[in-house]
Structures are given as structure tokens and as C-alpha cells.
Image (cartoon, rainbow, N blue to C red):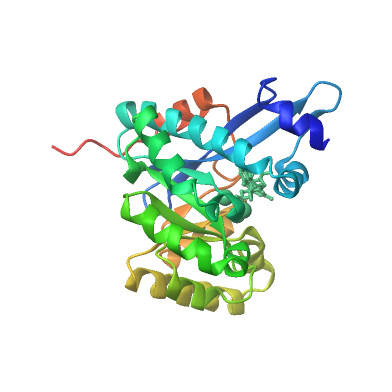
Amino acid sequence: MQDSLLRAIEREELSVLYQPQLFLETGHAAGAEALVRWERPEEGLIPPERFIPLAEESGAILDLGRWVLESACRQAALWQRSLRGLRVGVNVSVLQLEHPGFPGVLEEILRSTGAAPEGIVLEITESALLEHERRATEALWRIRGSGVRLAADDFGTGYSSLSYLDRFPVDYIKIDRSLVRRLETNGERTASLLEALVVFAHSLKMRVVAEGLETGVQLELLRGMRCDIGQGLLFSEPLPAEEAEAFLRERLLPRSP
Ligand code: C2E
Ligand code: MG
Ligand code: MG
Ligand code: MG
């Protein structure tokens, strides 16, 4: 699998799906998250949770991640012209982030695709970042300085969530789907925690995104606590770019007069 992963890009076996994100209060389009897929001839679709860790082990993540970033920025550049104000999230491995060439690669991709940096959100998993703090911090500040936005992904699954927010220049907190699920099963306790998190995030001008939103009950609870954005099967599964575009186009913010 390691070997064929290295050749998957050349063989055009990788593709990117886009999962729509909506503002919870109004239902308007907020953006989409780019999610990589690997279609192997004999095996069919392999989920990223099976091959991203392998790619990280072998180092293939640098090429793979660059390919995803470039695809997503090319798509974002198109959408920035036709669907105003939408942001495209791209998952970035901490191994990419701590590679000294990464900020330069990102700037080059923004230039060549014409994507506006303000429309790109790099999603970084919280727990990974804390382990690689020193080198990653420098890269994050440089990247944020170029206008690209940052999101703390899978928030609530790591260990030092609050200190993380104090140290890294993030614009979005993505609440992990395990916490969103606990809203219903664990009730009051999880609700209070998330409610406080939203207040805290807003006081620092961050937006909160709920991942894995599956039920109307979750939606109402999150809307009630002023969580900003939702992403999950309740709205849409990850879709090919054209289908995601059609979904988002129907929900665009009305043009201001
Ligand atoms: P993630 O960044 O937290 O992405 C959200 C995952 O939740 C996606 O899984 C998405 O399909 C899934 N999801 C969306 N809505 C729902 C829902 O309502 N319920 C449930 N149960 N799940 C939902 P996916 O696409 O399998 O990706 C899994 C993980 O793989 C991602 O988690 C991300 O960490 C990683 N990944 C995906 N694409 C890339 C990539 O291009 N680069 C890197 N480094 N990692 C990636
Ligand atoms: Mg993500
Ligand atoms: Mg993640
Ligand atoms: Mg996540």
C-alpha cells in the first residue's frame, strides 16, 4: 500500500470531495471542507483514515498534501468568482506544517491558482499540533500573516484545548463530532461546556464550527448557543465539486444592495 500510495497521484487515483458548511442562524452558505478520497482499482474507495497515517509514516504526505491543497485552491479560486464569500477548508497534516518549505509552497499555490488567501482555511488537528509545537507555531504565524485562515480541527479530542487557543492564531474552532454527539446523550453537561466555549471563542473573534451535525435536535441546541457554522450529514455528505457548488449556490447570502 505504501508503494502504490506514492504512485496514486500520478495514476490520478486521488480525488477531492467538498462537504458544504452552512451558517446555523440563517441557513446561508458559509463554505466547504475539502476531503481527499483514494480510489484503488481492485479495492475501491479507501477512506482517508486508512491511508493518511500511512502517508505520514512514509513521507508521501508532503506530495499528497500538496496535491490536495492545489486542487482545493484551484476550486476555491473558481468559487471565489462565482459564489461570493465562501471559504474552502483544507486539512493539513502537522508534518506538512512543520516542513520548512511549507509556507513557501502555500504562497506559490495561492499565486498559481489565483485563490484569495482570505478564502482558504487550513484545518489542523489540535492534538498533533501540540506535539510539534515549536516548529509549527512559527509556520502558523507566517501563514496567518499572509491572510490564510486557520482552524483548530477535532477540537475537544486532545488534551490542552484551552492553552492551544491561547498560543495559536486560529480563526475557527471545529468542535469534534464526538462532542456534538454527546450534546444529545450527555445533555446538560456537554451543552454547558460548548456554550462556554462559544462565548469564549466569540470574545476572541473566533468562529465555532460544529462537525458531524446529524440531527435536528443537535442543530437547535447549537443554534441556541450561538454556534456559528455547521457541517454534517444533516445538511449534506461530502460531494463532488459540481454538486457541492449547486448545493451552495442555492443558499448564497443575498447580495447587499
Ligand atoms: P475531519 O477533518 O475531521 O473531517 C470530517 C470527517 O467527518 C470527514 O470524514 C467527513 O466525511 C466526516 N463527516 C461529515 N459529516 C459527518 C456526519 O454527520 N457524521 C459523521 N459520523 N461523520 C461525518 P473523512 O472524509 O472520512 O475524513 C476523515 C479525516 O481524514 C478528516 O477528518 C481529516 O482528519 C482526514 N483527512 C481528510 N482529507 C484529508 C487531506 O486532504 N489531508 C489530510 N492531512 N487529512 C485529511
Ligand atoms: Mg477537517
Ligand atoms: Mg482532522
Ligand atoms: Mg474534524
